[in-house]
Length: 116
Image 1 (cartoon, rainbow, N blue to C red):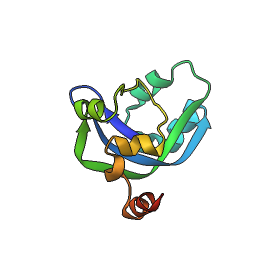
Image 2 (image 1 turned 180 degrees about the horizontal axis):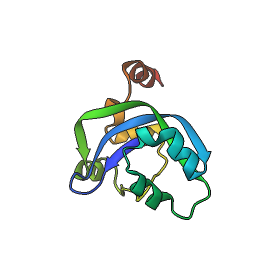
Image 3 (image 1 turned 90 degrees about the vertical axis):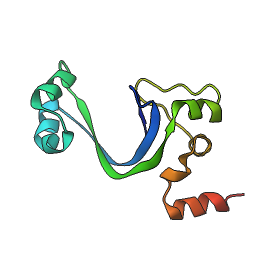
Image 4 (image 1 turned 90 degrees about the horizontal axis):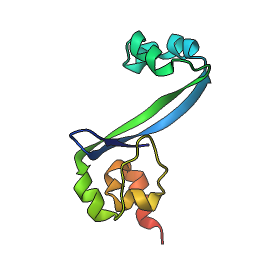
């Protein structure tokens, strides 16, 4: 998952690998993951209000870009780039075209470089 920071930053700032996704009642998610959410109980309850099932994404590994890729650069590198409101799937070529090499581990970079 590539992280785009909206607001005043407007840049790709890092990425994370998903370890697992849990689908459960909001009560179960809070009981299992409350200490890892970064949310208060009130914030959590507001987010899940009215839902019978919620989803919790467990993060495996994170990467932070040393130099965030600013929106202006993204627009120059990939015409028609539009930050999404929630999420969007990208293929490897799209990630690489937007400066994503810095998000790949060294062994992954070698594999990508070795492709025909």
